[in-house]
Structures are given as C-alpha cells and as structure tokens.
Image 1: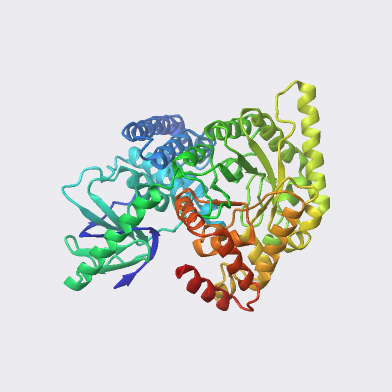
Image 2: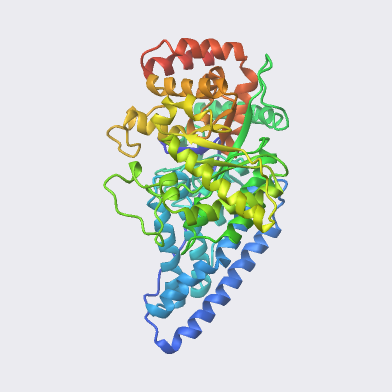
Length: 570
C-alpha cells in the first residue's frame, strides 16, 4: 500500500496508464528591436489559436452535465484574452527583447508565482490555471503538440507527474477511471474538476513504482493506492466500490431537498466562489446561494486597480447567474500574503497581523469606494449583500458603513439604480470581535465566521509551521467558546450567523455547529451534499445534546474522540 492525498472521493480498480508530457521550455532567444512588431503579431495569432482550441473544447461539453468544466474553460478563455496579460507579454518583448514564446512564459510565470506565494490555498491553487494558459499559448508558438487524452483504447487509471486543468477537462470520461499525480493540491482546479467529474483522484503520490498495464486500486477518499494487489484485496475493494457508488447515488437525490433535520430545524447551505462564473454552481450543487464571493481575484489578475465599470460587470454577472439567490460579496481582503505590485504596501515583520483587508481599505477610501459603488450598482440586478473582512474594532465597522452611505448618496445624486436596503454584515475572524460579538451584533445585518483566521489568531498558531501544525484545530475548547459566543450574541440581536471557514465543510464539525445553532454553512460546491446529508440525518435535539456535552470537555482530543464515537453511533 502507498499513500498520497485524496482529493476526489471514490474507489476504482483497473490498469495503469503512465502519462508523460513533453515540458514547454523557453527558447532563451533575444530578438532585435526590428523584430518587436513581428513577435507581438505572433503572440496575437497564438492567443487567437489558443482561444479557438478552448472554444472547441467548450462546444463539446454539456453544461447541464458538467458545469464546472464549462465554467473553467470560460475562465481560461477570458484570461487568455485579458488585455493586462497581453500588456505583460508585450512588455517583455519590447523592453527585454524576449521572443514571443519566452515573453508568454515569463508573463504567465510571473503571474503564477504571485499566486503560489500566497498562504490562502484557494488563490495559491489558481497558479496552475495561469501556467496552463501560458503553456498552451507558448506551445502553439513553439509548435509543440499537446498530448490528447480525449481518445483512449480502454479503461485506465492515469499516473502522471502532473495534469493541467485543460488536460483534465479533455480526458475521455468513458475510459478514465481515475488519476494520481505527483504534484497537486486539494484546492487546485484539477482536483476540483475531478470532483465535478466524479472520478477518484489522488495528488502527492509517488508514481515511480508503477508501469503501464499494472493492475492498481485507488481510494480517493483515503489517498491510498495499491499496485498489483492480491485477490483478497481486490475482492475487498470491489465491495467498497459498490458501497461507495450506492451512497453517492443516495446523495445525488438530496440535491433538490432542503437542509432540514428530522425534527424540523432548517439551515442554509451556500457555496464559496472567487469568480462570477462560479455562481453557476449554485443550482447543480443544491445550494441556496453564495456565502462568500472572494473579490481579490479581480485585483490580483491585474496590473492596476480594477475600475468601477469592470467590477460592476463582474458583480452584476454573479448576481444574474445566481438567479435571485443571495450572493454575499466580501470586500477586498488584500495584504498579508496577498500583495499587489501596483499598490504601495509596506514590507512588514508580521503581515498577517498588519496592514491588510479593512485596514488597507479604510486607509485607501478611493479604492474602497470604487468597489462599494460597483457592488451597489450591481445590487439592482439581484440579491447582493456586502461583508467587511478583518473587523476588530467598532470604529472600523462604522467607518466602513459611513463610506458605504457616501456611495449611496453619490449614486442617488447621479440617478443610478441600486438596492438602498442592501444587507451589510461582517466577518468575525479576530478574537476581539468574537469576544465582543454582542456589541457588533447591534450594527451588523449578519455575521459570517471565518474559522481559518479565527483559529490561527486565537491559538497563536501559524498553520504553515509544521512543528506546531498539530495545535491548529477548531475543536480547541477556547475556539469553541468563542464560536458559541458569536452565535449566541448574533441570535440575541436577531441576526443570522453563518460560517465560511473550512470547519463548515467538516461533517463531524457540522453536527457540532448544528447543535450550536449555526444558521448557514458556506462550503465548496462539491461538499454541499455531504454537509446536507449530515444535517438531514441528525435531529437538532440530538445535535444540541452532543454540543452541550462537548462544552464540558477540556481538550480537543477528548472532543474529537467523543464526536467520532457518538456521531458514528448515531
């Protein structure tokens, strides 16, 4: 048995196909100033060809069956045509005298590197899409033929060093049973696509011991895989595969059912997105809206701050794709590990406790108001809501609301349509805000708990530090007491309380949060059926009993052990 990281649930048995691709290498060729115009023209033609390839792939996809693949291809098309990306490429041709393919690889590599440097897993994983686009365009310029996985002779389980998002989309779904890669992360688009395609996938796997034709078993839930197993193991996993498929069929039937407990307690399950197109996932996932629209991508995929019109178009698109369902837009959460080259942000000893999110926005009202105006204008096209991140003091919330009111006054004067009663809430992710939830609840329309940062700050644990990573757990009694206070005080003030951190996606934690009284679970689209299943199977009265007992325990080890024993027995 060998082990990687399971990123897409499922069990499959079959023959291995070792997939090897030829890497796109730069020419390392310097051009002359006389060649600049010609090289720019080559880039334009290659981008046109790349877009045509992507559009051809898009035409073959049934959006009703696989909306995630369609959305991702549309994103790749948009990024390929992005004038700011083209501007970067032109810069390297004109000022560094790089050849067309070298300029493309440098521009896409620079953009990808800025994302890879982020601690935020969601944004770090986007680097793969940017490199994929750059490699496609550079490959066309260099005449490198992309290997096609769309036509395979029989059923296979792919073993590869890496798979790009577009290679994953192009897979012959009839014959690719699953895949394993040496490189990758659970939040990469390749992993997300595997989930949407419902094929088991493992990343971080050691693939060197596998040869073409070996019989293999992969378990995308546990990350375990077996090469040339014995008959007993084959029979065992054949039974496990059947059980998994039966459970998956049952979960699919929950899509159009509400997230309501057997004794009548109803909660909302919504999804997290980072681009307008992703709002398409609401209905297929069986969700009730968007609980977190991360807007940083609009800024990070740019060489200058996006203007009001481009932001308005993005927010309006999200609102319209949501088809009347609520979309909570988190205002710019930049700083910390998310830095922008075009903004003067000071170098800090500890940027995660520094000049970021609402602190940066309040200090730069021109940038902040541009975003707020765009959101307000887009609110005329759907149920948009505004959420301020990283609030630690009442003065910040009041100042943010004051700037929002200024924007409303300006738009009224200009005769612009907007929702004057747009709901305005805040992220509760700093211990000071969690402890003073009663104070903030009087001035916010809703709370959304960001458990990733709340845990990090409460426990004084850097999640990326492997030496202390074991201390990072939302089941710590101190963290749970803060969560209880947020929910209690929010309800006392009559406002709903949601959660958009990773804790909301954990089925075991979901029972605890249900018992605590959480109103809304904001999770990735692929996790919606699993959380909904837990909610529909657990009586609210039973969840309250579990929660009340957990609050008497003194350690995270005791708490997790108790929940595992009692939820499994439930």
